[in-house]
Amino acid sequence: MGHSLKILGRTSSINVRKVLWTCQELDIPYDREDWGIGFASTQSPEFLALNPNAQVPVIIDDNGVLWESNTICRYLVGLHQRHDLLPVEPAARARVEQWIDWQAIELN
Image (cartoon, rainbow, N blue to C red; front, side):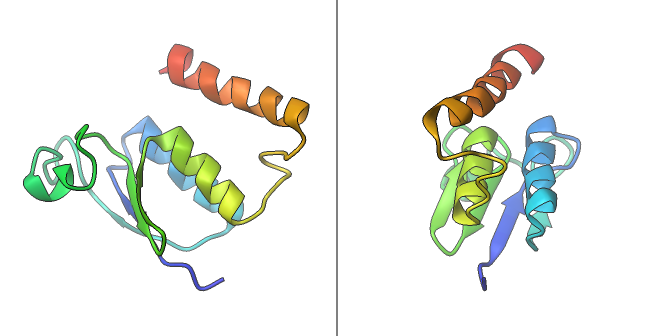
């Protein structure tokens, strides 16, 4: 699959690390740029045009721009049809997604 992927965000962000981990699991190449605390400002007009919430990560690929780490992870898994990571069957998928939602609310 000749899909280009750019990830904007610093590796010290747990949300960026989730996306990087997903890319590792999927064995997909990407380019990454440091954005956020200590790096390029997420308050810049350039970044705000990509994510009006001024948060990392943001991805840019052949299909456009996405932000929100859990959404990005779901998208990448779906794009690469890795149903072992995010099942199609509703009950199995819900069990995976409940942990994704728990992490976003409780762990962070």
